[in-house]
Length: 245
Image 1: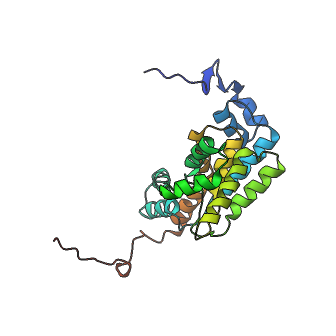
Image 2: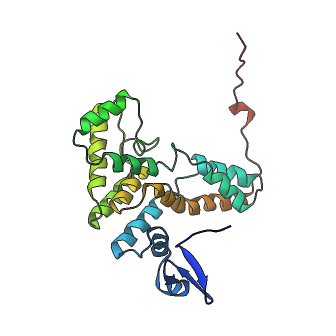
Image 3: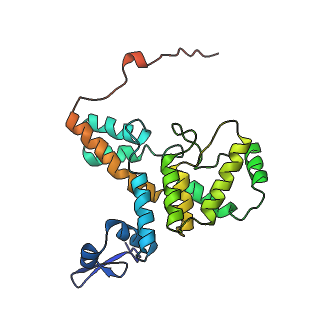
């Protein structure tokens, strides 16, 4: 088996990551800076470090009720190992929860130069295409995490044409929609990652990195509370008798 990589090599008793000796990174760089290095191939600027750090913080947890955390806690309550419960949590992510950033980035990269945004929204509505990154079950008017990220992006001069287009598109969606659809955290991260020049295939990656500590915290809390295996009470289950025609 042969693998080609430009990420890490071990040579002369030294581990080299993207051209940098690991022991130097350990002493001189932060976790966020090295994450950036892994995926971008170069170390970030101070502004890029602050922006990526903020995105990871913004996505770190969203309570026990979401699919990923619920999966993780149920798995932990069955006394599965930490890594098994974490895997269960990660498998709870999907287009409706947590990993819409890639779809948002693909959408922005494909449409950012369009000028007839009203026409674009109308066409997508007619085709019943749902654009990822807009709308939230709890934050109906504005996602405070997204708002904070965009504010920081402006302060750091990272807010660019993709974030601008995302807001223009959001305004037009809301002009044509019967209910408010804010830019959610996935949408904000997607737009900012586009402005930072990341590949759309990394649109899920940074959310997954950010949310993993939150899942692990829920798993640990479930382990320490040890209230027994979680399952639905019979009163919460409605049996529906379906008969064949």
